[in-house]
Image 1 (cartoon, rainbow, N blue to C red):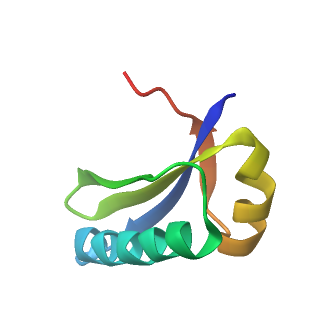
Image 2 (image 1 turned 180 degrees about the vertical axis):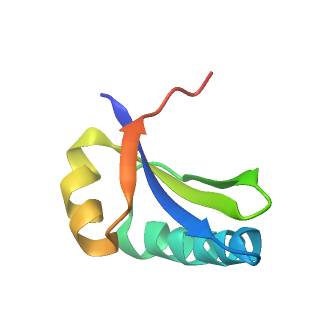
Image 3 (image 1 turned 120 degrees about the horizontal axis):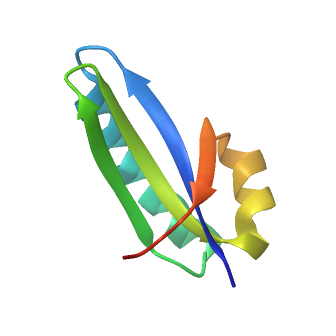
Length: 79
């Protein structure tokens, strides 16, 4: 089964802090909705841009996308 990385972009001087906080809520969602995977994280892009992400199985993507409204997504490569 393919895995998809759902991404939320945060911009501004507090982007990294906001992304870190968003991951807290993503982890709560994983538990509440009994998602198959437990892969989340943050990636600083630069001083004013950071992303938070959640990896889901392709079969769960539509439900999670509609509930959480990520800004974008891509195939996830665990390597």
